[in-house]
Amino acid sequence: MNPRSSPAWLLSSVSAARELMVKRLGADSLETEVKRAMKVALEELDLMRQELEAQAARLVRENERYAEFFEYAPDAYLVTDAAGVIREANQAARELLSAPRDEVVGHSFSEYIAPAEPVNLLAPTVGLTLGGTAQPLAGRARMQPRDGRALAVEFSARAIALKKSGARGLCWLIRPAPRP
Image 1 (tube, rainbow, N blue to C red):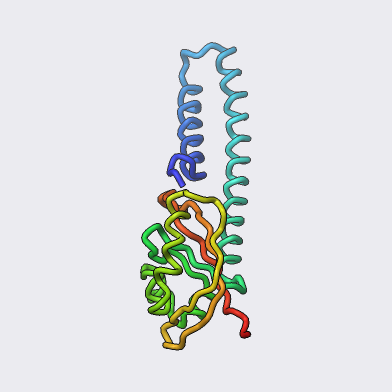
Image 2: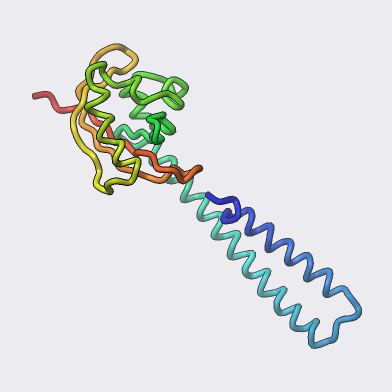
């Protein structure tokens, strides 16, 4: 998110404008009509600030709700950057990979792919991260969680904009494959 579009920046800008208006109202050089217009504008500004504060509080609650949904979703979700580094992993993903957060986030997704699979699994994702297609990628692969047991999985991946940089990354949905 651009710092200039954040609620805190907007609220501080409104506060700064309000302070300037209050100082200007205190000046003796203002005409009565101008003072009255400024007081009306100040009241409107106060109403806008109250509405902005309420909107900011709603946005914070929605963001917390989304983060909680992501973390506790029943399916494994990973977010990787264009280089395949895991940026986010929910609880189900960490359980699937048999690893704590610090051994997953910041590590390469390829560390969790069975030795024979990386090219087959990761090569098609290049087109997604470069913007070649909007269609999600789906398939089956073998993963290698930290506990050493190979695991057949079904996955789908879709290109997304990463929240901090805006660069393209991938959101992965991973499920254990049904046994034949």
